[in-house]
Image (tube, rainbow, N blue to C red; front, side, top):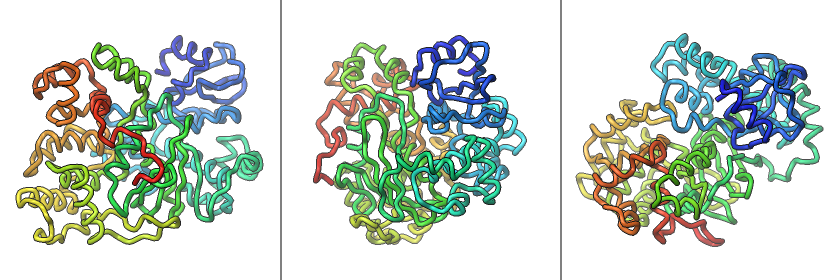
Length: 493
């Protein structure tokens, strides 16, 4: 929306936090860029220019505002509801692909030439993949500088910089402060953390209803991989350079995040995946406004605004768990997954105890003996076919996936019906318009609202909910008293 000058001006003058991350305000007279909600007196309109990304601001020579910290805004919700080249590229950049594989690696994953990717990103975001990745590295560096006591050399390489000199130059250029000055300014705000644990805040756009978000994750938690403890959802993470454990606690204005990583280079990826799992970059105001146009949904939305779609940190893991959960109860699905983890998961050391394994990777499960699976033969075939294609790369589910192409590939596998495909599209791939008209909970809720509950009738009614049908599903599910709809209480697990 950065090209809509009048709309941007109104957002800045009203200090509307809903637009943080949608665009950035660069002030020509000061050389500083801000988020729309910056609390300082708004500059004169003729001194403002609006840019689509922090990277574009930095590339144009602007420095981040020290007051509003625009580099720490929630990400643009555009990347959540789009599946085009730019959106897929941004999800991959957020997952650290440019730092690990370079621009050629990014392009290869997307199936385009590096030149095409560069051109598309420049046209829409005012910056290429290297500049966007550099901006992300700067943000990660600032986070480590301000929240940890790690030596600067360790921070430089953990944030993805190739040298300490580049780290120093970038921090000074982006924030107009040296790394040491950033740490000094933050010394009074740094919280206490256990050794080896990083504590940080994950911002989001308000409102956020945590009930179904954390309730779903905890109700379906796999023993040894996930748990609810002391008001926090905890789980193990398989990451590019190592492994980790994360604890996520809902707070009124942020999600408190505690990370324990075996390799600090995984910080950016871990944060990105946790944000995707909790759907923190969504625009709840726009979503709720669209759903509220339906007279039957409007009361549900008004009762609990800001519902998010609970997603995953590992797309392949979720696909396997979706097959394990076919036509069985939530408890039975947890049992099946727990047995798989106990037999084939990689053991880890949890600094707080309680978590014991990483969920097994498809490559590990490729040699699975079908006779060890306590499930019908047809479902064994479905599971083993999925695992085989995930393991050899025939089927790839990730941030770069084209949602419709992934659906087609899943539909070609034996035993994959509409429910399994759509639940994977919703919770693994992140398609906000995924819809489950055949789901028992959705049909039951529809009947309670006086709607026809056949899949065809529900699909027709849901046309008005596009492109946010996955969020409508959350509201429909919430009409039931199933544990997935409630924030766990102390002691639940």
